[in-house]
Image (tube, rainbow, N blue to C red):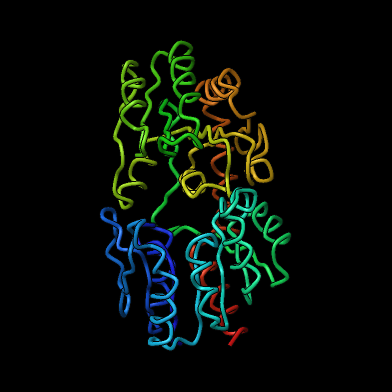
Length: 342
């Protein structure tokens, strides 16, 4: 097959998705020429279009020309609001749109973004989402068949970790308002007061990183790493026992949450997205209301003080990941959908 993707080349999701199909197909990637953060993605050819806001209006026409020149068998756009919209203007079929969360959960309620999302999904022949809540939301915007295809994780990279004497909490969500890192700061101080031997590993970047760093480094139990390269993620998860997320919104489940679960690191997260459908209190972790630092801290303390519970939860989570989040199985399912369209 000759496949053409429209997607953000800074995203590890994009890299892992397109490189899977590039092994046996001719794959072209169309992405904006972001000034920083572009990943080395192994495809037949990467085609760059303007990221500068003043020139971005030209992308609709540039994408149309590129797709006409590439002549793919199938066009697949990731993120409906932006790349999905540009893909829809080509009138090329079969056309697949993958929704990543905000594009169907938030943007349909914001003008003018709503117009872009609705056109992308209206013109799609098939829509995929990485979470149940996104599948439901997309159903209000399109009549196209919808499938839940998680980004998936490579199970060979993530090994179950368990140490009954360890007391390490890891945070990996980043520092934007949607992640509610201010609540996490409160959680850190509350847990450190109850369990003085606790250690926090803090990973992630974002526009508010420096402010968050100053707030967190006042606590001596925090090791602040900032953004790290993806290949180092499994190693840091091997050092952790409890994973925490204070996010106020989620498209499905965060990839970092799933990676933690695959590593036997027990999640304590907010009840957003698919967290509340997947994580059961006292069985494989805890879900707490958004902004409830007191309860989040209490649940973390419980897990730190009860290593046998951590072990039980870790084993249950690994089994769930193996069943529903295996990267190769997810991509194989997508390959079957491609063939069905063709």
